Image 1 (cartoon, rainbow, N blue to C red):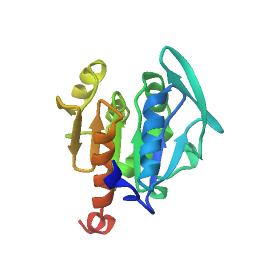
Image 2: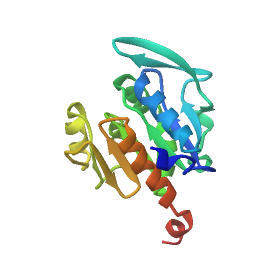
Image 3: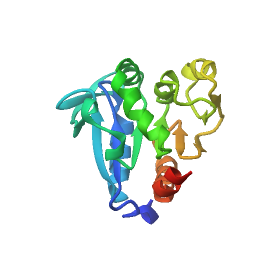
Image 4: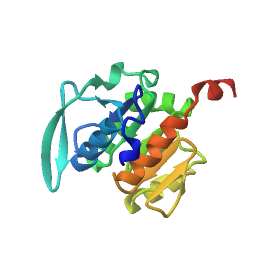
Length: 189
């Protein structure tokens, strides 16, 4: 990870979470992204603070830096969504999630999804024809939406990175996508 130190200086990354997100995912991702020099913001449909899930119960509260209803994809260079069935269900039920994520997907900005988070984009019909890594619990839901499920720990499909783990391999691939993203080239295409 030391080779990524300050690699994302000047880049803004959103971590999208709702109540019930997997605490260990968010905290490890947040720490790793801060070490890359990225400006990391927690975006949430909850106002003020958002409550994590840790082990078999509710975890810590974390301050939400930005409210989902007023956040736009153009405010960020990339977005990452941790796993956690409670927060995935909450994000799916909020129409602001699809609006927010549509901007990233349409602009082909870097997006990282962990564990069951791909379901959020599949339900919003933002993963048609894409390939992802997911958990067994949501494979059927993904395949119903024409999403190809790949057997791997971490998978890259253009600017989309999916993983079963919130680990260094995910951060390295995600950071690489962010560094290689050229909005001018995408807009000209």
